[in-house]
Length: 233
Image (tube, rainbow, N blue to C red; front, side, top):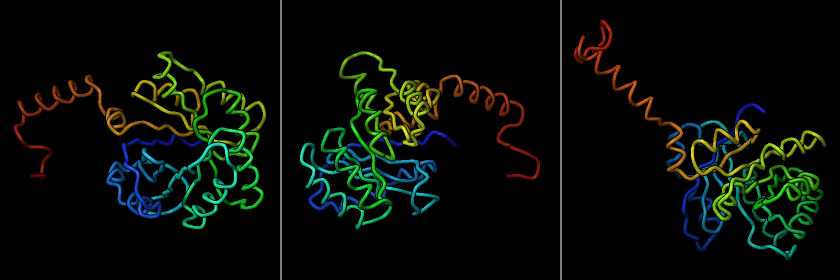
């Protein structure tokens, strides 16, 4: 593991044509943050991804796109094939269901280079099954579970241990809801973290940092005014 990858979530209204949505996402201004290097697409949520997969723009860039469906395999297979043909930068998200894992195994045999994520994982058992089936990424919904059940769900560290125990290479994607949780899931060993953009901005901020920097600038300006260093304007 080199470092945790950061994803920022946004509300995203559904678009009539999937191709239009994918093209529109590539124009996302979140790349200005530097660490945002890709995106993921669902019917109502768009996610910007810091990822080491694919190439576009600055560094490496990828798009996550979710199939529409849950219990019927054939429609999901058709969508996954279409998305893969559309761009090899797309990682296709499949649901954590019997049909979803069946589709995963079939597609891995049919299209070995197609990268697949299993999404909406809400238990250690589902995380194990996703990795056993060969998922490239297990998207663990620990953050939404925290909100839905009003209780902390420490799932990332146990999943990391399971994957270590059995030698699974599946990456762990975790959901963050605030800066402290981001730190906690990084410690637990998540490979990727998703969070809303307003929370991602907070990762850069801390009241103590603000106070120290304001104090430093006040002291400097009291002694030197608006000057910086000799020879500079």
